[in-house]
Structure formats: C-alpha cells, structure tokens
Image 1 (cartoon, one colour):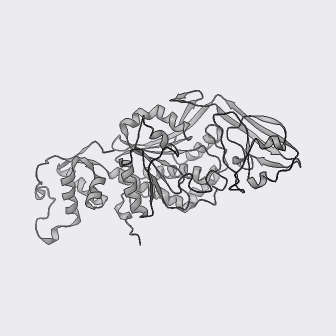
Image 2: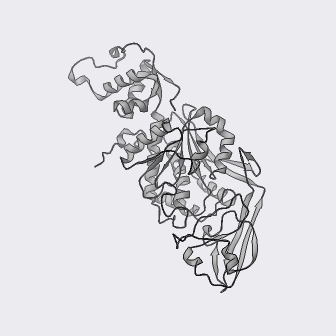
Image 3: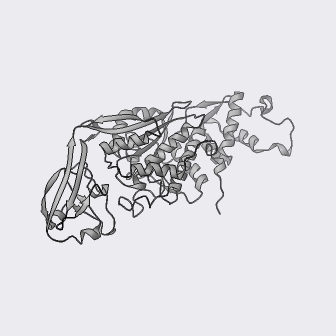
Length: 448
C-alpha cells in the first residue's frame, strides 16, 4: 500500500483556488469543434476562448519568417471540404469531423474514379473504425481521412471532390502569459494549440495550462517567475526560441511540455536532455510523493513534442514532459478515438494538482550558502536552539536546521538536501526562513 506523502509538497494546500471537472468540461466543449492547424482562424479563436481564463499576450509571426533552419509557412484557410459518393451522399466532410480533411490540404475540385480517389484517402487497417489524423504542412497535397471499414466498402463509380482551401501570406499565432515572481529566474509551461478534435493529445494540455495559470495567480507569494506559452507544435516552439532563446539561456531554471494529461492513466515523466537537472529532480521528487511508485519515468529521447526543440543541443534547456499516457503509447493516439469519452475531466483536475505540486517544489528549491561556514553556529545565540538540553531537543525542526547548515555550501539546493536528509521540503523551507532572518545563510544562484 502506497503512503500518501502529499503533505511534503508545498502549495497543494496553500492554493485557495481549485477548478471543478465541470468547469473544465465547459471550456472543452467550446474548443472541441474548432478546426485548428498550425495557423489560421481556428487557432486564434482557441486563444480567444483561453483568454477568458488567462490574460494572454498575442504574438503574430509573419509568413516567411526564418526560424533557424525553418520558415513560417503561409496561413491556411479552409472554407469547406467534402467527398460525394456515386449515390449522392457525402462520405467525408470536414464540417462533420475536423479530422476528415488532411490538415493543410491544397485546393481541389473535380470528379475522380474510385481508383483515382483512393490515392488521396488515408485510413488505419489496425483501427478500422477510427478516423486518422494526417497533416501535410510542408508539402502541397490534398486528401481525406476516413475509417478503414468505410474505405473498404466504397463502391466503384464517380466521386465529386471539393476542397475549398487557400494558402495566403498571413501569420503564425502564439500567445504567452507571464506571472512575475520575487526573482527573475523562470519556469516555462509550454503547450500546443494546433491539433483539430483530439482530446488528450491536444485540448488537455492547453486547458491544463490555463487553469494552472489561474491557480498560480491566486498564490500570494511566488519566488520564481512563471511563463506560459500556447503555440503550434514544432514551428511554434522554434519561432518562440528564435525570439526568446537567449533569454531562456540566462533565466530558465526549469520547464515542462504539457501534453496528454487528460486520460485515466498514471502520470509519466520524461526527463530533459540533461537528465538530472533541477527540472528533472523536482518533477520526480514531487510526482512520486503525489502519486507514489506508479509514476513512470522515461529517459530523454529526441522524439516526441516540443521538448525536442527546447532540448536541442544549441539550447539544451532543462525542459521535460509531464503527461499521463504519453503520446504514441495508447491506441487512440492521433485518431478520432482520442475524444471526449477517452479522457476524464476529474483526471485533468488531478493533473493540474500534479503540476502545481511540481511547481511548488521548484519554488521552494532555493540554493543557500553559509555566511559563517567554519564550525557549527551557536544556534542558541540566534534563538534557534532550545535553552534546555536533553533527549526531547532532537525534534524535526532542529534536525532540519542541522542538515541545512551543514549542506548549505552553495553547491546543493534544498531539493538535494531534502533527498539526502529525508526531511520534508516544507520543514527545510521553514528552517531556511529562520536562518535567513538570523543572517546565517545567503541565497546564491540556483543549481539547474
């Protein structure tokens, strides 16, 4: 039986605000039908709705902008797209399900035979009832996605195809929100808003980030600064790094990509490229106390989501991933089966709790150095030691003081001291507060 150690996590009990599953569901239902892509009206509308929860700062990156080895593509406009079968009925219509159209399809109108149409159809034999999610952002093509069971039943004959789309010079939409703290060092929460009608692999991340921002804003005192960003996957994080990468090199102490946080599976943590950064240590410390040994910990690999860009060798930022059933690990992934029924809004609320627990650990994870490092301070002079000696004086607070004062040499942060000593982080926080007031320690640059 797992022991509940959530009391060792700062902020979980301190935050005065907590959303309900129904509150998240209401926003989900408004966001679900929008046709999102890496650019366009669906993305902007998504950000407008999220902006009801978060004071978003909109950033528009013009088409043609160079972002390292990439170029921001033209903006995609989709008016309608459908296929009409020989019997006059529509067999695939983007108005009925946004996954039916290959995302970023070029325009086409015409009549095709069954054989000619098949070259433009996509389905999954291994999931015959699911519509797959297919994109073609950087190669001009058009196509439709449909369940394989339907595809195999399509009769011979003539098919009318309408793809009323357009690619125009426009912009790529990002939004950010920054919660300043007492110090300029930052934590980033990054999530993406580019997938149409996918519940876990799309909407769970942006919704978590919005409600997490709202909770953080309700916490009275924050040591670190927290930056939230909503962007299209890959090209969005590249554009963001092109603008803020040098700032992150100086200021970022930790970051997490929020994705696939709404299903009913146990939590998963994927390490940053560094493997043992403060971001990694804080996440694993907090999530193991939050969930217990069912936490899954994965080593970094260069596949996945935007952690690939944040952790690219030119930046090597301390950014990991906190998820549930991480992308690609569940059969519903990138299909129409990743829908409202697949996720749990109660699980999503708990995922917000988990993120808050991790951020609370990071915020408490300062690094200190003794001002008088030689020998043990006479704690009684500072009102930090009981005036009466004996067996009752070895309490938890005194133990925390002794560990802190022994290990506070500027090379070990509070998290390292907590793990070595076994003293709970909130107890070490209180010990640090008392020692700072007494002038026995000073804060130094963080260990990242």
